Image (cartoon, rainbow, N blue to C red; front, top):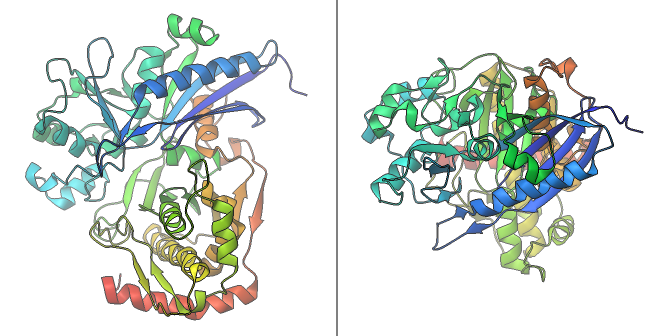
Length: 500
């Protein structure tokens, strides 16, 4: 029974596929979860643009649904927004979009860092971002240089969470964890980086105002409050980047653990006490940027296509369900029909490049060892195993960089719903995988960041609500069976990329 006179925290997670809203009490009792589909327009191959009207409507509808479902007398103490990184939109003086909003995986941008004249080590030590083409700064440069923004109207550039907070409050504010993803943020000073802005021909006035982590951005606008049925002035917080927020939701706010978030892409995060340098991260191989919890930093690696690679492989071999979705259960069942080692098939799962630690955007996926007797089950099993070996490489490398013994690994996202995949990962890394009961880790974490901002929740690990969950451990015999498989993969990696 939830007391009627209770403080409620609302977290919003604007993801690639779904928009999720979650209401929780300050002790972690989830009251309501609302989900809406995101809409992505694909006008041409490689083009991917978010429908911002769908985002605005989804947030309003979701908040209204939560407001209606709250117990009598319950008070929403804060609304906090987390979102994917890199996506950006220009707005005019009235807050209306003056450009479209490319997704983080839109492939039209390039790495303009060399053209900016900023040395790669300086770029990394300033921003903490890997020298890649994904940063928001490059998207802004590309949009402007291709006349894809209404220059007469554009006044500010906002990332997705910034835009949503602006819709709710009228204020343009940025959180450090998401601002860092732009490549324009000085992670050491907590300000926009003048030398990057100069290269772009922008000033700080063209960007949202950076706020400290877990800070109230403003109050809910009266017209929005009337629309959603919540009090005007309700505190709104820009919680920041979705992956660090998911880390907060899983209790990952101190060094010594790893969060593995697997969806279309896979992201691996661990906590460090401060900004690591270009040299300390093996010459900038891993991103290191502010956490969504105050005073901490995140060391981060990603595989651009993990679940996405499995989905592609399944659709290619199996087709799709009637509703157009990937038959997840069929993927797992097929993989179970092949033994550990996939009868000799090996996969380098780099459909969209390697991600860390090699950061080779040009690297393609490879299927190796194919024979006439191999079938669909072997290919899918090998894909699970190939992704899992990539995971092992990154866990061991990040542990070395952070100088930490990583014992606790928390798995979230769609990939965490597959016990088979979790067992294979556990076998490769030799550690258990812990899975929280709450699927919406980023929305839950955003809600907790909102609680930090209004003083209802502390920032230490012991202050966070404890989630229930389960542990998946690979049987000893499975670990033994994967030892020679891991050796084969290690040799393949060294052949393709050289030793770390």
